[in-house]
Amino acid sequence: MYKYQLVMYWDNQDQLFIIEVPELPGCMAHGETQEIALTNIKTAIELWLETAEEFGDPIPEPKYQSVLV
Image 1 (cartoon, helix red, strand yellow):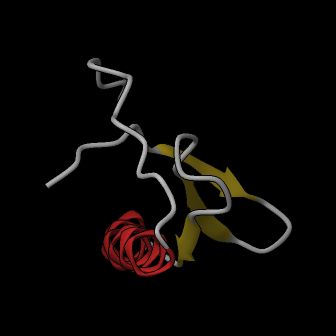
Image 2 (image 1 turned 30 degrees about the vertical axis):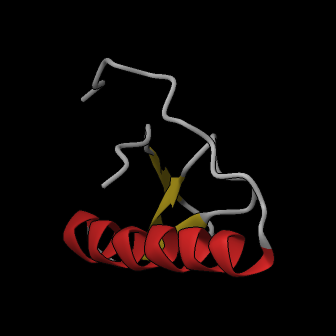
């Protein structure tokens, strides 16, 4: 299992938590709560990795070792 950096922020306009995975271009998810957003990003990461594997695209190694809270 890969462990990528997650960047979570609150979107005032849409009233949602948004999570992006900087090392996986275009991989992001959202949710009304932090917990829902985290559940959704796990699914998004799995789908991103499956799609990359299916098309033979390279899968980036995680670069970041720290966790920011």
